[in-house]
Image (cartoon, rainbow, N blue to C red; front, side, top):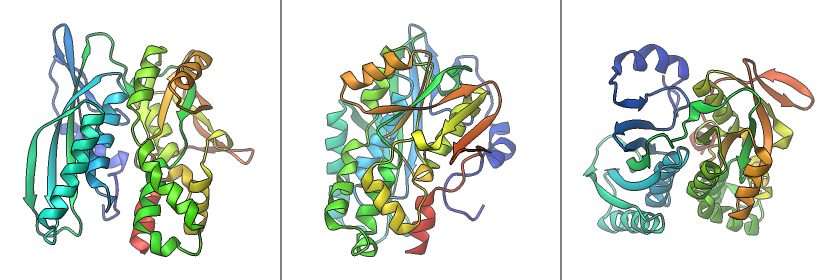
Length: 328
């Protein structure tokens, strides 16, 4: 377990999940690929999720708010509140803390969410400030969509493009390394990908259009997210690599760093499984959200079609972001 990034699915199954317990009022339990827990409160349910932000050196407050609310968006729930924990590097100044909180507050207000609490401390033994966010949402009972709701025959859509978050992080944090290899105008456009990082609008649009399941694409990229969607639903998936949109800015940065954009952290993109792809695509377009059909759910096999060859789609590996940052 020395590799950075998510703990492997095998370790989670063997070491973590056996110790979680069960309650009858928990409607959606912890499971591989599941973004949120859902707790029964009668007419309403509470939707909960938690996430760390560890890979970004810049715009930490903004990432923290959007990454956590994105998980809620996969259920169609309304985001309500955030608990924000900041583990500050020992070199952090008061001005640094104020900048993080100002960005977090601006992002929260844009989503009409309140930061309702948390914890802030200077923590020894870390090389950068880390944010951990717990997000709380609500929905009427019976309306929540889970990552595990996909069925064989559902079409799989991807909103926006692969590597949205990773593109913004690499263009910002590795600007010196990329300078000369990637045109400065491309890097400027790539940094603005941070503005695309929320998937709350597509979550609401997908829910209205009758999505079977939705999954926020984070560590492991689009291919990791596709495997997680299939795992949460207990079925298979077929993904067509050439159908996955990759923005020119992402392509240029990934080529310069020898990164696979389909395995790059992709907050800002959402996978949607649906029986009505045209209706869902139309609902997304009406909200100004680009999307493409990239595959379909199948009974059992998990397959990636790439260059005309079918290969087994594997469980998520450490994200490409971690490898590149380790080299810098």
